[in-house]
Image 1 (cartoon, rainbow, N blue to C red):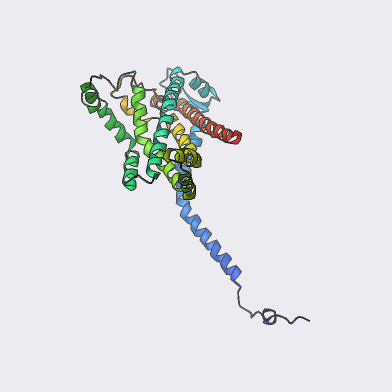
Image 2: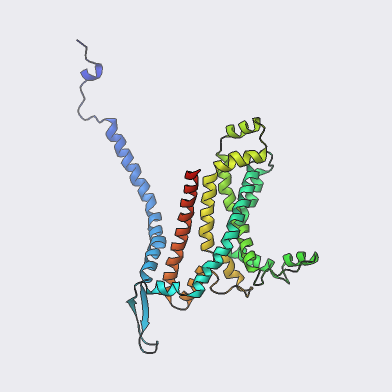
Amino acid sequence: MKAPTLSAQRPVQPGTTTAKPRKSRLSRKTTVSALLFLVPFAIMFLSMKVAPIFYAIYQSFFKTERSGLGVGSSKSIFAGFGNYLVALQNGDFIASFGRVFLIGIVQVPLMLTIALFLALLLDSAFSPFRRGFRLIYFLPYAFPGVIAAIMWSFLYQPDLGPLSGWLRAIGIDVNFLANNMVFFSIGNMMTWGFTGFQMLIIYSALRAVPEDLTEAASLDGAGWWATAWHIKIPAVRPAIILTAVFSIIGTVQLYNDPAILSKVAPGISSTFTPIMAAQQQAASNNYNLAAAQSVILALVALVLSFGFLKFTQRKEADS
């Protein structure tokens, strides 16, 4: 017969507690403390982010009517999808999407290519002063968007800015604020401002690539470009896709650069981008139509970003 163990022979003294309830109380206390810290953020997020979105959607289904000749009292009536139909029939609003698409088709691939190249340079073993260059590349993103746009508006001035003067000195006469150059000027401002941010995301992903892979490639005789093309770039493909999604959303929501340049460039109208078109409707006290245009803009950004994600996932599955 097996002898009983010491723990079985020892009776549990009254008034003693086990470790499990103590740990559970400590866990509940930690959870409550964490929730209390999250409450201020949740309140601000719900009141400043979520609530305005739902309020804009709500307002997009109404319209304001005034009695008499338009000077009497106003009342809000349900319009259904009437504001959306008006927005989709507005030629200026539809043309604004065409302009941002035209900018994005050229600017987004160019910006991502430059960001990937800079990230690969920083990740290379022969890149000196890596930390300093990383800060220099990221510094334009730290500039406030409005300040950067004002700075570029002065640089683009044909009589005051240095860019036109330098080109004129070598026999090239270019007006960056002319109607046929505003797309290039805006795309250049976007590339200058956001390449560093995209570069930092890709560079962080490159730092996570195992060194064993690159060392094995170098032992096999692969050079810098072959290692980057066959090992590093495929390894950071998710980061490149993420930066592409950020770029697509940012291009659709373009506002600061054309809004500032419109003060000095006659080719930039008040409805140059979708956000500017919605702002014009709001400035005309047509808040319901502006809300409908904002919802359409959000849906377009959602469709483009998720469509791009689905496309890349399908390409990965086929390969």
